[in-house]
Length: 403
Image (cartoon, rainbow, N blue to C red; front, side):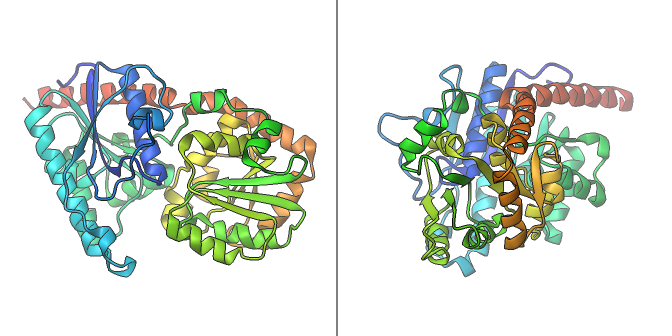
C-alpha cells in the first residue's frame, strides 16, 4: 500500500447519521467527495440510539444533498450508547464510554475487513488502536484538554502517516504538544456547490420562508451551543427593531432556551432545525449573514472552521463576524465586517454599518464569491489526496532507509 496512489479509503467518524448537528453534514459530504475521486470509499459511523428517521423517499446521501453520482458505502458501527438517558450534567462518563466503544469497534472492522485501505479517522482512539498499521491518517477538529487523551493523541500521531487539522489553531496547538510540523496539514471545511446552484432569488426565497419582502433581513444558520454566540445576536436584535432576524438550526433544548431569551422580540424569528436542503433558502433570503462566535472556549476562538462561512461564500452573502483567530484564518476585511466578540452593542453596530452601505455589501459579496471555488468539497479532497500520496511516499523512503 505504501508509496502507491490512494485508491481505497475508510473514513471513520463518531457521528450519528443523520442528526441535527453540522458534524453529520460535514462527514456525509466529505465522504461523498472522496467517493467521487477514488475507486472505493466506506464511511464507518456510529450506530446510535434514537437516530432520527430519514424522510420518506430519501436515503442518507440525498438527505445531505450529495450529487447523484458515485456514492460511498455507509456502515453503522455498534457502540455503548446511553448518553441521552442521563441528565446533561452527568453525561461525561457515558459520552467517553460511547466514544471508546465506537473507536475500538471501528478499529476492529478496519483490521478485519480493510487491510489494503487508507484510513482517515476523526477519532484519535481509533488511530491509537491502529498504531503501526501503514496508511492511517488522523483528522482533528479540536485538541483534547485532558492529560490522558493528550498522551493518547501523541501516541496515535507518532506512527500515523499524517495529521489533518481543521484549522490553524488546531495545528499550532498540535505543534506545541510536540507533533512534527511537517506531518500536519490544515484543511478547513467546505461546501457542496449543488446545494446553492439552484437557490431561488431573494424575493422567491422570502416568499417561501414567509419573510417580509422588503425588510432588511439578517440570517444565522447553524447550531445554538453557547459558544456559537447566538444569545449575543438576540441581544443585538433588541437594539435593531427595524431589522428582521431569522435564526435556523439547533437542537430542541437549545431552541427552547433561545426562544425564551427572545420572548417579546417581534423582529426575531427562531425556526429551529432545518433539513440541509433548506439552508440555501435562508441564505438566499438574507441581506447579511452573521457569525457571532464567543471569545471562549478554545473551540470557538481557535479551532472552529464553521460550515456557515463557506456556505455564505457559495451564496455570495456578506458577513458580520466576531473578530477571532479562528475566523480571521478564513476571512479577511475584504470579505467580512469584523466586530468585537461577546458584545451585543458591537455586533449591532457592525450589522447597522453593513446593512446601511449597499456598496460595501456588494464588494464583500463579490469577494466571497471569488473565494468560493477553492472551498468546495471536491477542491479540498483533491488537495488532501495529493498530500496523502506525498506522506505515504515519504514513509516508504524512511522505511527503506532504516532497512
